[in-house]
Image 1 (spheres, one colour):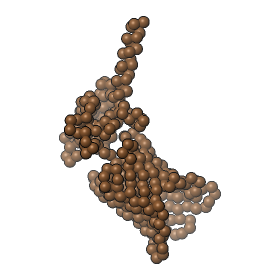
Image 2 (tube, helix red, strand yellow):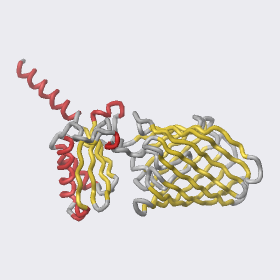
Image 3 (cartoon, helix red, strand yellow):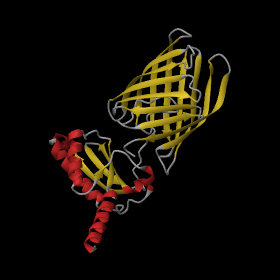
Image 4 (spheres, helix red, strand yellow):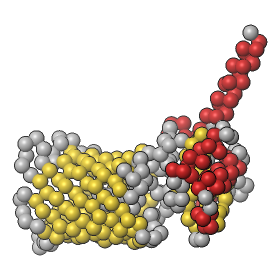
Length: 328
């Protein structure tokens, strides 16, 4: 009986230790492929560190978060806890890419083990300025897309006025597809997008917005577009253009100018503007990212539309967004 109790206590201790060593890796450098990931998991598993694909947000403090990104000519690994405090950092020469995949996985795993083992914040890095902030809302403005893409497996939900509902899914790191409709299902739309990153400051995109009537309504419209986003993921401008073809009218050009200008990590000015022949419209306002749950945000401002030659209608603008997935 005593032996059974000791074994049970040992099992519970080990099980609790394993649960407290769950990690999420956000590879913003795109260095980790399937082979490197397999080696990472192998090395980390030997240390009772579990690499998770999805986050249980309600129990996010059971996880340690690691960000791998390019910084000048180096690769930088940053670990943070659920309070967004940095608990450790490591840098690798860009020459690491020249090593074999098994070695790359082992080297990164070794640094993760060292950082995960600290268990507390690095001295002098508990201030907000030391927090690792990730902008989860860089793929869209109010409705218009940017040339940044969702990561594979990420799901993004957006609603405007709680009347129009929209879902976008990252099929790969460079291709996403979405769909949306109103609360009555009229109309509905499908919108695929291919993102082509050129460098840290320039990304291209091509996509399509196909709108169709539902419940027997005979209406359809299609907007094929292309565009470029200039700037960082938090501060950028997007220029896009395309053509509208619908069952109600012939082809017409449409142009879009959108931008995000941050005041801080959690407040930004957001604007998107469209013009087509003599019509124009758009949204301008602020994006508020909630500090306690930075995967969700609110967009508050004004929507406007009308004719270039007539009066403009201005209405309050309201949207809510939240992202689900594997890296937050």
